[in-house]
Image (cartoon, rainbow, N blue to C red; front, side, top):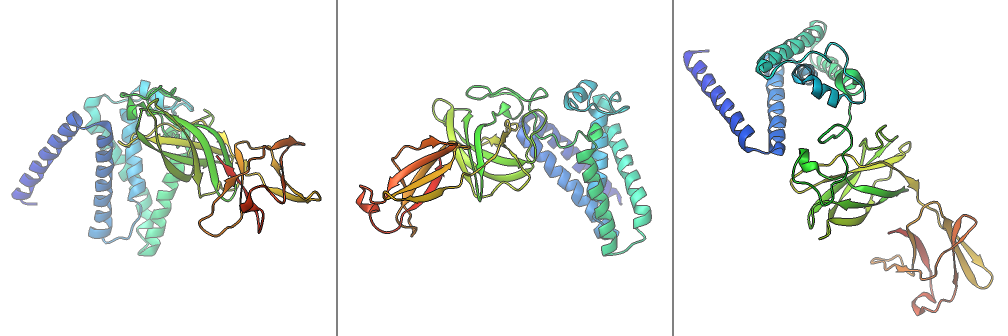
Length: 367
């Protein structure tokens, strides 16, 4: 590098520091998080350019090395109190539980994080750089996957994948009509009441947030509920938009085209406002099966329609044609509970002229 290059580098460094100061002073927490994410991608791009573009080696390992350095810096810079707050389910292992750097040693923590990442790169690179082409890519990608598995399962060191936690550790209570302060503005999570799944999924619940505002609700399936009773979000099912009323609340029924996978038994949800402030995970609720309709012809002449009473909230509807557009009508007869089933008995020649002739089709609508 010539003198001119050093001067340009110094100028860019000063501009970068000034930009960081402006961001810290004038941008909100959401925008700062987006900037953090952008700079992480910049670091990743530089790392891949060094090994793939300049060195000419087809490696997919920089992600894993970045993770090693990132975890090192975080563990060194968190205070003891913050570590107690963050690692509230499984305590952080010694010596990281007691080692903490003051803010003025941040640059030193960056250097140590870089050395840890370089050490990991050396241990992996020494044997794998004897490989070439796709073989090097496979070996380095395998290392990144090992780091990914460790990050999710070595909970005493990494805290695993605990999801979203706003404010003080643990689940926050719902704030009536929402909040204007705190992390993610202390965004309220939805309250789920019932979920059923068959070829699709339907979820009933209620949202209490700021009045007359739209919120995106995202729903997730899990094999089991988190020990806290809230979360997590392992399998994404879909989302809907709910607009709160003047009284800050709105009930909803979400009809999602994705069924709950086999082996998944609970449902959770999050709420996100128009400024992308996302809530903690809601309390998990069990998912039940969609009742099956049973139709039996009687001698009267009547038809007997029944379904199990294991899931409430279903309305029986009928139509005479399945040609679009389909017009479903609610059956006015009140279901009668008999031997663990809801039963509706209908005449084959109903009083409604539209239903007297041709076929009659029935379905259960979750409303």
